[in-house]
Amino acid sequence: MTELSNLTREDHAVQERIAARSASMIERTCAWSAINTGSFNTAGLRKLAPIIADAFSGLDAEVRMEEGDPFETVSANGETIQTDTGPILRVSARPQAPVQVVMSGHYDTVFPPGTFEAVKDIGDGKLNGPGLADMKGGLNVMLEALLAFEAGPFKDRLGYQIVMSPDEEIGNFASARALTEAARSGAHIGMTYEPCMDTGAMSGGRKGSAVFDIVLHGRAAHAGRAKEEGRSAIEAAAELVIGLEALNGQREGVTFNVGAIDGGSAVNIVPDLAIVRFGARAPDAPSAEWATGEVQRLFARATARDGIHGHFHGGFYRPPKPRNEAQQALFDAIRATGQAIGIELEFVDTGGVCEGNNIFAAGVPNVDTLGVRGGRIHSNEEYVVLDSFAERASLSALILNRLADGRLDGAGIKAMMGR
Ligand SMILES: [Zn+2]
View (cartoon, rainbow, N blue to C red):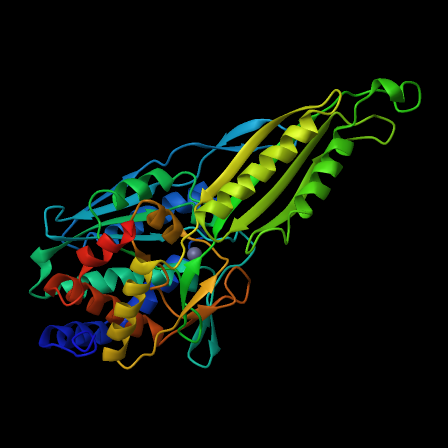
């Protein structure tokens, strides 16, 4: 790893270039933050997408916008409805180059219009604002790293496919196919730009995440005159909820959480509808399979009740991303690269999920917290640490230099995925 922790002339060049552009990176991030892009704010997403496309057109790459796949949600009255968000941004460069990287990020935020607006300087070298860290800052880090890399001599040795999604915060249902397609087009390594911790710590292994909506139908009846003719969907749902929660603690690392229940109406009517909405997390593929099997078993038990039938929606939309041999080799290489610029990188396992899970599921080892340092994300106190823009863009540019000049063996790391 000694080679990785040394700086070459080309490494110095990318660092200098990035340092000189730190202020403009921050300024552009603030401008993007000022445009609300809550995942369901289609107008805001459509407004920002061409602005991002324009910024990325500075790369030696083809930039295009495409519509995402329509996806289904279950409404409060149990109906399946089609939902859409904004466009997907795709950037493609040198698909014939010997080293291929898939890169990703999202431009949506968790904040609907009117809930959290405006950027504020909160002192201490930090800015507070929606999406600054998660992850409009990360998109700018990715862009500057690529611009710096392409200004150097190794450009022709490395190509990339970038997917910037409008729907990461709601599960990438519209953009999952684009991510998988980009990862499977020959990528050796994946690089995603979620924020890292304020301390600089990055994510290691990630659990898989599932979302389920189970719709149960019973039979309505007047609760006073004909209670016995009714079949309560809420009673069936209650049994289901107890069964789901009882699964907690049964298998290492697997958790279930019933987050919401819809259904029923007046107290004098036997309820004919209940919707149980819940999530599950699992650390590896066999435990995800176990979790899914248990949910199916409980669904079968609920719908075996007299007069109850139901619909089953959902599953593990983000498969687990365990710390396997390939992932560990990549983390080690990135850690050594960080040492070249004096940063000590640490990789911590988490129950959280992101696009890195999808890229791993597509067979590509990846590191997914290459964005800015920040904290309090998904709250009105979200902040970004200003000096992390240049620091993290330099880290990414060095990774690209090393992949291109062969000091970091992307193909070798990818080959470990099958083991
Ligand atoms: Zn994010």
